[in-house]
Amino acid sequence: MKLITAIIREVQLDKVREALIEAEITRITVSRVSGHGQQRIEEMYRGQRIVPDLIPKIKIEIAVNDAFVDITVSTILKAAKTNGTEGHVGDGKIFITPLEECIRIRTGERGSRAI
Image (cartoon, rainbow, N blue to C red; front, side, top):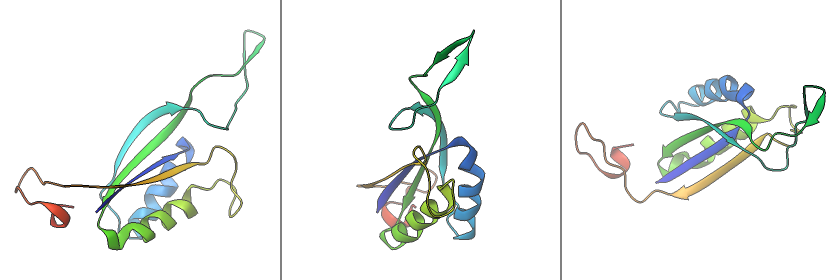
């Protein structure tokens, strides 16, 4: 089992969510987060040019069985790029971490059956 965490642009959420549903990946958690990496956005505030420290992003978390890791990652990669196949700085990141245990609260099922 793996936990796939994707940090993407806010405007790409609907496209990524629809692509995941098409790939039959329907159990996701979505959070609004802020952060920064290489992407820099300049804004004008009261006539002054400022660079905000934190940029709003979307965090998607998906727990999957090992057989679904590649399809989930490739679906997010295709849908989250802002310029077709090239993409831009700030399109986001995907993290894959081992998931030690999953327990469904309602039934008490554990492991891959609970996902």
